[in-house]
Length: 498
Image (spheres, one colour):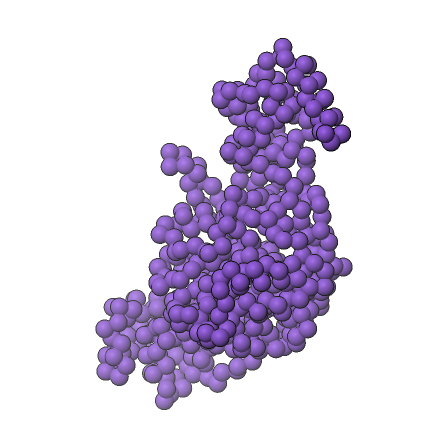
């Protein structure tokens, strides 16, 4: 028998002897747990947690099944007693009350966290600390991460990795698209700024789901590796988003307006409320800001506000010669994953050092992403200007998609094709655009065509940024009579300069 096992057996015998006449109560169990060094705390949503050793290695929500199992195991291991459901219930409630009303608050984050020391990335129990000096694995991270049942531990990264191995597993040959995707993936490890929505689309057999599964495995490994289907309810979406650091919605064929609006808010960063219980009047307020991705056969995002926050990448069908069996593909990826992840952290450390010196004279809608993208591209061995050009070109694609989806935008462009200015009332504008839509473009029967001048005004507000990208500007004046002036100017295609 192993000597350590002998010592353990002896301690167990002594514990049994010492406790044989002492029946545990809920009070004595709670007192014993508190004396053991367990740290109780609550998070920013007033949810009660405990940390058995006072670090962030193991954190349990007290009233969860795992939390209750820990309490039962503690009673058996330390007191050699199996506690009943009544003692467990009262001990759990007492510990929960102590955590909420008598203990400190620790704000918990999913997978990534940043402070003055740098970025912390959760590996499952240990964590990676990344800062401008480099990165290292910390065995006992602070209490900053929350973990859900679907979360999987991340592989340990290796130093001097190779992030370009990523493109062995993602079907993108175009160099500009590769650079955009590379920057997107690496920036997903940086919290607290708006991330663009990544949209992959292409024909069947283009491998749209696989690259997102690869990204999920790298950024936020989960048992839900195949992604989520589109939720049907707002509350369901909030639940999904709050449990991930990166999430993708797979094989979408349509985009309801409420879903599009919620994704735009979540990508930029906003607060969402969700009823805690159906019988409870209290709302839980979540602040959500995370990288989100979508895929589908067709490009399904057409609302201007969401397109403005997006990166669009079209994939081509994979040739039979390049296809691999599922098990072979993932076996090869698992071998390369530590090197890819290490390469990401190598680049992040360099980008964090470069970032303060990056100044862009012109900024797009996702300004933080553009600045981080410049630094990441430089750190990865590319030119920051090449990233800016690729991103600007992608923004032009966004405007084209929005205009193609809007019959109002198309009629405005047709109206201004042979003139530099148009002036009139909203009613007059509706009349002339309606004539163009019906007679020239055959768009008047479209469900998206506004039914009157008031609805036309709302449509114009939505697609105004896309028209401005084409050099079309609207000026509205209110007085005795409302007037609209539309002007056309030469477009400056240089969206950003470093």
